[in-house]
Length: 258
Image (tube, rainbow, N blue to C red; front, side, top):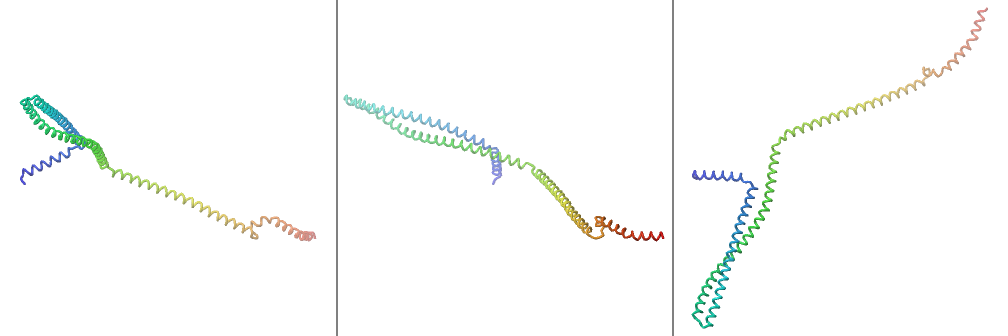
């Protein structure tokens, strides 16, 4: 491969790349529709011109037929009048118009075929333009959606989500620690409450045992608590003792007198 061929290929590749990058789908679609509509206008003008030519040829053909029919009648009239020379001239004029009519008939047939072809082409182009407009609107909507998606992805990719995610993780860790501390405080409070109730239960047991012991001691003889209700009995015994000592005292008193 020669140097110039390589340079030409590189230049062509770069130009194609630049053109591809510069192509805006929406603008290209609008331009394509404009070009198709321009073709439609030109085709309509061509169809109109072809139809006009067909009409003109058709008129010429009809005029030629009218002339040859007229000279046919003139030739018959001349023969009826016995003027054979005039009849011959009339037939010669008829022959000329017959040739002209034949030529015009061929042209008219070609023009008719051409007009029919142009009309079909016109209908096809109109249908294509209508389809292209519908497709253009759909493609433009897809292009806008793709651009919006691309911008959204660029925005998402450009966002610093790692810092925000780390912040959320730190806050979540703090919330978990606070919940753990709150749970621990609740457990400690519950434990203190349970210990207080346990202490009450244990103290009530000691009190019950103390009361039982007191009751048991009250039932023992000679106990201080048992003697308290028997004070009247002790009084009676002291009185009896006093009664027993009274004769002795009196006897002792008699001895003193003697």
